[in-house]
Length: 271
Ligand SMILES: Nc1ncnc2c1ncn2[C@@H]1O[C@H](COP(=O)(O)OP(=O)(O)O)[C@@H](O)[C@H]1O
Ligand SMILES: [Mg+2]
Image (cartoon, rainbow, N blue to C red; front, top):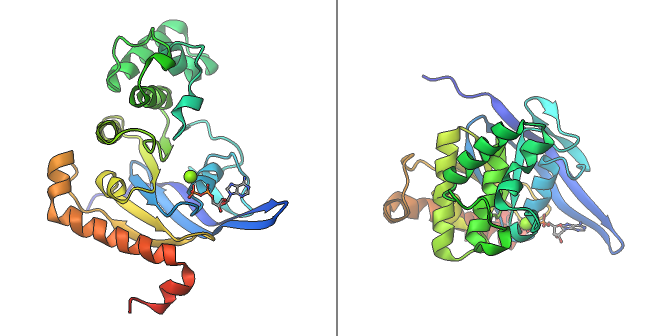
C-alpha cells in the first residue's frame, strides 16, 4: 500500500468569537480537520457558517479565540509564505493600474525574483491559465472570468504549497464557472499543489473534491466528511451524469439541510 502523504494543514479545536458592539458572535464553535499534502479538499456549508472566518484564521489574517492552525507543523501566527489565496472579489484583488503581467508578477517581484526569470514565469503562468498573449492588457479590459484566471495565475506563480480559495467562482456565469472548475482540477494535478476550496455550491464541491467537509451552521463544527470516490479524471458532462455523482450530491445536500436546521434539529434525527 502506498504511504499516505504527510499532514500539511492541521486545524485543531479552532474557535472564533467576534466581539462586537452588539455582543458576541460565535462564528466557529469547535472545528478540527487535517489536509494532507497534495489533497484537494472542499469545504461546503450554509451561508454564515463561518467559512470565510475559517479561511482567514488559516491564512493568518485573524487570530483564533482558541485552538490552533498548523502548516507544516508550525503554528500559523501571520500570513504563511507558501500559502496563496484567491477570494471571490477578483475585482478588488487585482490592481487596476497594473497590467495583467505586472499583477501576476507582483508576488515574484516582492520575493526579489530576477526580472528575466519573472517575465518567463509570468508568461508560463498566463499560458497555464489560458491567457497567453494577454499580459499587456489591464484587468478592467477583461471579463470577470478572465480576471479570475489572472488572480489564479498570480496565486500559483510563486509555487505555493497550498492554494486556498474562498468561493472564487460565485460571481461568474455558469459556463465560465465550469471552465474555471476544470482549470482548478488541471492546476491541481499538473502542479501538485494542495488545494483547500470553499464553496456554498454542493455540486461544485462534489465535482472538484477528493473529500468534502460539510460544516454545520454557526457556531461551526465539521458535521460530516464525505469521501468523493469518483474517478480522478473528471469532465463536466460525464462526471455529472455519473449515478455515483448523484448519490454523493444527495448525501452532501442532506447534510446541508440538517446543518441549516441547526444543532437542535440534527440531534432529533431524520423522522
Ligand atoms: N468582522 C466580523 N465581525 C462580527 N461578526 C462577523 C465578522 N465577520 C463575520 N461575522 C459573522 O460571523 C458569522 C460567520 O461569517 P462568515 O465567516 O463570513 O461565514 P460564511 O463565509 O460561511 O458565509 C456570521 O454570523 C457573520 O455575520
Ligand atoms: Mg464567506
